Length: 164
Image (cartoon, rainbow, N blue to C red; front, side, top):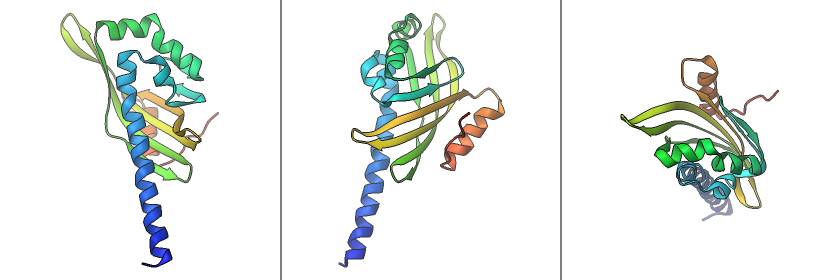
């Protein structure tokens, strides 16, 4: 086997390992949110990472921990909730990546389980000393608004979002 072929195989293996690490990282989000594992959930993000959705915007691990420990969040999970993430599409670009997926927040009510929200998620990640971490998660309700569809399209194309 030539050096070029070995290098190509190593690159392919690295790509598969990176994609798997990102998919595993994001797949853990729902379980951590629903179990109230605040510190572990925050560790998915870089220390100054951003969580931006329609209801709340947070910057930094301390704000993520506070959200999971909040009365609101504890009420959801105390009554029964599932943060369900759909399959993730990952686009790698060296030490950065873009991922896109859908998520549902299902809550338990007296009438049974109901979908509280359906969200389009656009994730931007970076590989650092601790492995892959979220830099920005942007989520928008899938309620017909063009912004949510634009998030999905950008993520499916592997495009980073423009920030103001």
